[in-house]
Image (cartoon, rainbow, N blue to C red; front, side, top):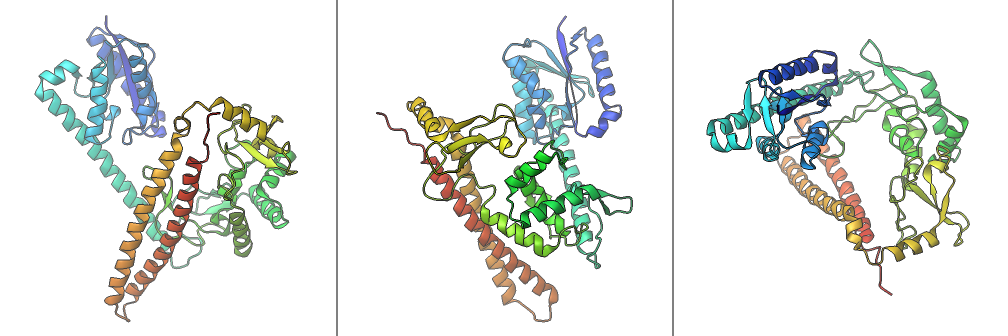
Length: 455
């Protein structure tokens, strides 16, 4: 009898507590019996994975396809799904490409909701089947698009309600998500977590005493102070991202993410969280941290000290190796585990940088470096693309503000507010453009840094 595999997916982990999985499993068992199929016990399941963005093709469904491609699963098997929306909710063209990719591997797809069976041959021969599959994919995508728009609208309403709160104190809560020194309460606000607040205040006091973030992390880990957040140990990146965050003075910047990193959306909400650090102390220490250049890989000087910034990792903890030059001599220039520096790793191995560089460059002298560092080209292209977009936005904002000023009525307070917001945004864009140009120069220099000459 032909072998069948069941693929199941749900997008929200809360559905795991319900009947979603059981329903899909029971339907697959009944279908297999009806069509004389042997249902394999290795069911492929994507839990809490979105089909709207195709994340399931990076998960269990992607694993099924991979196993068929390499022959680990025979290509004459059946794939049983509840409906097309379990397979994909992407745009119809993208969903259809994935659908035909599976069929072209020789897999038969069965949809339980309408009891239809699809093969490569049936799609090519039966126009009705082809149209039904495309229309079903279109409907699944439209449902997800509509849901996405409704959710986005609901969040926008929440943000606007919070920003319009006249009191500006203890604003309406948008979400239960909050910093690790706070917890949501039953009154729609947030309560302090005293022990975590005390640690945050101590970190700020240590910074005020002149300690850098790396030293502070080492102190906390060495003393065994429990890390707040999800990590087992303290890390410099957490201090910079979460502790040196505007939320300590009570402010909250809503963020959104669409095919890329998080970006701000809407107005900055002041006094949204309970304040635990005085603004004067926060801004002073934040400015000091920025001047130290945290998060910028490598030196900004024209002299390149470390060719391998961000590329060498510790085999024990997985953290990047840190370049140090304590005594300014050849043997003191070393690569060490940054986890060890933070007292979170036991790996005390270090490499003399000059020897490490010489050996590695000799080894790779006949290798095309562009094949090793392709991400540099991708990052540079992405930065240039973002720069073009920012310049276009700056041009549009400038023209729009000029138009508003030309039609300005001095008694129109709302128009004045919009003009001022435009000016603020123009200043932001100019700063972002300046930063992007700096990053482009850095990436451009990195792409030219490693040049290996034949002897």
